[in-house]
Image (tube, rainbow, N blue to C red):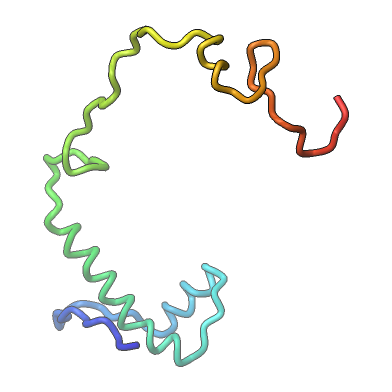
Length: 111
């Protein structure tokens, strides 16, 4: 499996040290080998840089939102409509009892 391409890092951007990655792994209770720490440090640095880039362009006059488009109520109005009577519904059932569907017992428990 190849590594994902990393974004170019500005010279002034701080890098994630192996010790910082080790501390994060410890806080997350993840046991990482030395090779994994060395492998993850540059990847985490790219993530931190990306978050910083997004934060730098985020406008203060735009309110935070969870969706790009405004949400609209997609539910229809709650109105009563004609429907089947209990007798009409149960007419197609193999068995019914006291206006309820009757099904075979599957757990073997007595009533």
